[in-house]
Amino acid sequence: MLLPIADVLTPTQVAQARAMLDAADWADGRITAGYQSAKAKDNAQLPEDSPAAREVGVLILDALSRNSTFFSAALPKRIYPPLFNRYAGGQSFGYHVDNAIRYDRSRGGVDPVRTDVSATLFLSAPDEYDGGELIIEDTFGTQSVKLPAGHMVLYPGTSLHKVTPVTRGARVASFFWMQSMVRDDGHRRLMFELDVSIRRLTADVPDHPALLQLTGVYHNLLRQWAET
Image 1 (cartoon, rainbow, N blue to C red):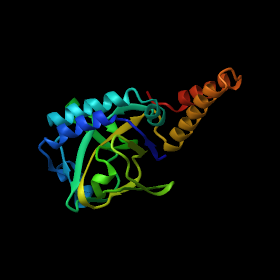
Image 2 (cartoon, helix red, strand yellow):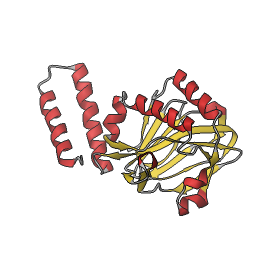
Image 3 (cartoon, rainbow, N blue to C red):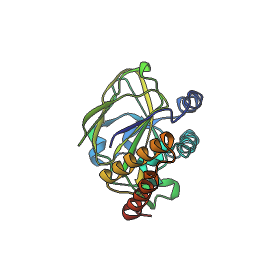
């Protein structure tokens, strides 16, 4: 499932994040890439122990904790701390698949996170740069994603994806992964669609007798599929 989520950060929060990130010391993004990804990766990245990365990461995680769409779609068990990258001057990232397991360095690098769901949170407005589209290939076809600042896209960690060359300006974004309570992407999609239907029915006809049954189906499926 590929899902854009609008307004994860407010314009004020985006401006706050950009002020910290733009003043930070960036490094070669290949230092955090695996062997195959390093051959395709050309960008700048904030070190994970950067004070700016940690502070903006907390801002993002706090915003996500209040975002019901995110929780409904990702059903997160664990969230890898947000990372940050920047593309400029023709930089790009060729087709690749994210590593299946990431080790959370904030927990000493010994705590594995399975990357079921990938996320990109855009921190540059589309008119700030040319190129820089996130191209994602999966069972839903090939999708090109370039969202307003503060908006985020979720997509399966198994997806083949790339970032096209940025030929003008700079593309700044946060990226991170979730280990979901529901590992299978098809199951997560069904759970999300069922949850959306229940919420719409609750808003439109709150006394409808089917609500109790549908809610029961949702929780029974979650009980069957969830890893806790």
